[in-house]
Amino acid sequence: MNSKQQSALNEKDGIAQPENISTSSVVTIQNFRKIKPSSKELITRIVKKDKVALSRAITLIESTNTSHFEQANEVINGCLPYANKSIRIGITGVPGVGKSTFIEAFGTFLTSIGKKVAVLAIDPSSTISHGSILGDKTRMEELVKNENAYIRPSASGETLGGVARKTRETIILCEACGFDVIIIETVGVGQSETAVHSMVDFFLLLKISGAGDELQGIKRGIMEMADAIIINKADGDNIKKANLAKVEFNRALHLFPVKNSNWQPVVSTCSAVTKEGIENVWQIIEDYLKLTKENHYFGKKRQDQNQYWMFETINENLKNHFYNHPKIAKLIEYNKKAVQENEISPFDAATRLLNTYFQ
Image 1 (cartoon, rainbow, N blue to C red):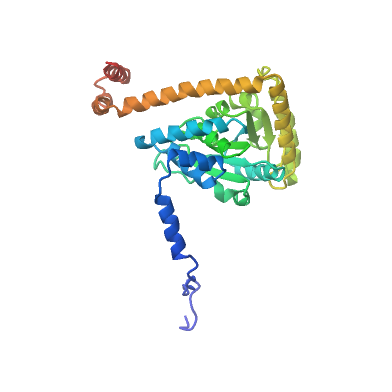
Image 2: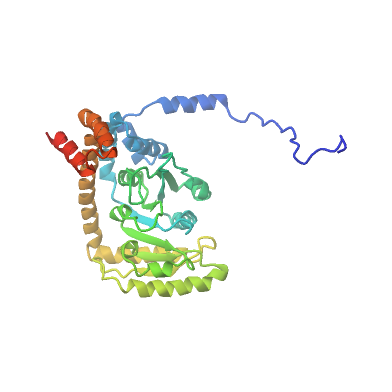
């Protein structure tokens, strides 16, 4: 090869980026982050619609550090009088259905009609590394820049049911901060999206046509919980398939018993890319709210949900207390080894541990 000719793989010297970050600003931000506001300060700033204070409070209640529990409860109780003034919408669907794209289009529409939207996006955590990508803000480029919107990604951790451990409490903080529409995007793992149904007013299931989903319509589970089924990606050559799927889902829904709310679930199509059908989704939700508020189901459902989460909190705290008990922690290691070597059965080991705990 001619020495003057360079390989296509040859790396050229890059251009140094100019210093465009103020050192003094960095120091100011770092010093601000070191300041730990009191519970009263956080509550005051949240009620004044301070998103930074909201984020810090959410981080506080999501913390597993036992030293944060008391302050977290103080913040939640302080925000409670300002909560319960929003519409809570749960959105789920299998991976690839376009949840993030739909939420961006839907959230943008809601802000255009004067709503303040908070999106609580739950990302699945790895069972191996226990990490989570938390990339929902990247997928909602326009909505994240909207001053009337707030996006908070959280990891699901070991929590089942498609939500994060503290999603319920986060809803309260977002409502106190003035957001009147709370959207919860679940991890989207199929038939296990149960917990989110117990914390929202309206449960929306996103589907796509041509993926065998029509057959899933005759199964109980997540389909039975849905208040509306929206077939996304109804654009281009896919419009005909989407309309056919709509007919199939309508037939399937009539196999289910009438809901306690007396609401008949609606099936509709939309395109999150072209925005076609997005406005109709909000109209469906408004029709549902009108009916359930008139027949008092809306208020009763909220009351039942509060009771449900009281018992869930008791169960969670009991479990945490059990595993963090010093004596139990030592016995667990011994019993784990005994179970692995088939010296005792798992059920016998569990019984011994529980008996020791209750004594």
